[in-house]
Image (cartoon, rainbow, N blue to C red; front, top):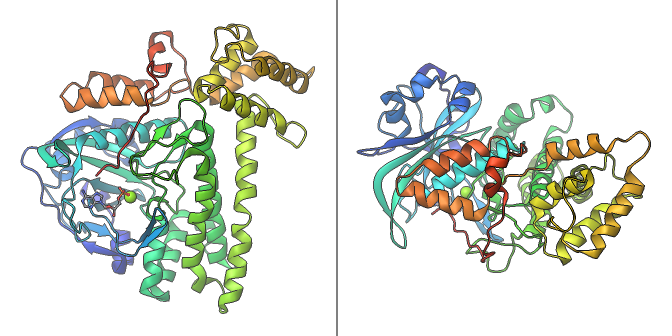
Length: 480
Ligand code: AMP
Ligand code: MG
């Protein structure tokens, strides 16, 4: 492993990190291993099964020449600027094949402030499950390589078993990293922008106005990402600027969850009192967060500040239209409509209205729609039950969508390839985590297998498709 590890971030941007040596744990234990991801990184099964691996990823052994760091960043948290955040419970070991290898829950760092730098095991496993699901669903995300039990308790409201997540990411550079760098002066800011371009948008390296183009590229990646979330019913829960990556990957799975019944106002996080990060607000927050990146980049764009602001604003103003275009086009595909235009967009809008006014399960609706169109399920047996608007909607769909060339079977097969039947449903995750924390890994291992193929419907896994019977309000908490 040693020769594979690089420390480009620590070396190029020493102003943006602090050296940090983990203190380790007495009896750590690896409880989940992602052999497939290990293989992509060049880490063999033999290595992942070895004591060497356990020692490295629990922070008990430090690789020779390794430069472990905690990264510095700022961030707007629920709209309030906090200049001094940083990795309070994570260290970056280095990079393998250009991917960051980070340990989360490893103990105190120079940025821990009053925190213990540790993680409870439940949130570690939650991030493992959901990030691996997102990857299987084709949504850019950080990945989970290993989950460890520390066999020590952390003190929260009660004592909880501790855990460590070995996380793999394209990088951990956040909007908040740019906000922090901007406070360090133009030289550091420029170095961070050049490093980010080289690592994430190398095609811009020699472009004219490369920093403006870099901003546009980040806008585009983030726009696609948030649209992906909206299309699958994912609610991130803490879209603070320190939780928004420059690479366009989903990061920091704290109080996130998937929406069951369609409702724009859905919010799960225990600390999101005002619903700032509710499902329907995510696109507006995307723009807000990108405006904070724009502010940080002002000094790099043009010698004249006003001109910089105008140029960045021009790019920022394209974000919402571009989001809408992407969202509707993807939503169209989910409904078997190949190409969305002004003429057929009403089909998407009317469909969402039906889900909304009848409180229909978002995920199941697309699978049932396909079955209804194939005539393998009746409307009455589906989630649409006896909604009168829905019958009318399907008639319109058929008139608009079925041409002589289009084959209903092809269309519905295509729909099934992009509409997941399995999502990490809240009640299932809760059961799996409770069992796992109590030492029984059966359910978590089963769902990890199922979530690898979220689009393949299998009769044996029917219970994993269904929403919770109780429909009880669900509350999620930050991983702290
Ligand atoms: P998050 O809500 O996970 O994005 O974390 C927000 C900030 O709080 C980050 O700077 C974290 O590093 C820090 N933080 C979260 N949990 C802890 C902890 N247990 N100890 C120290 N810092 C923490
Ligand atoms: Mg965070």
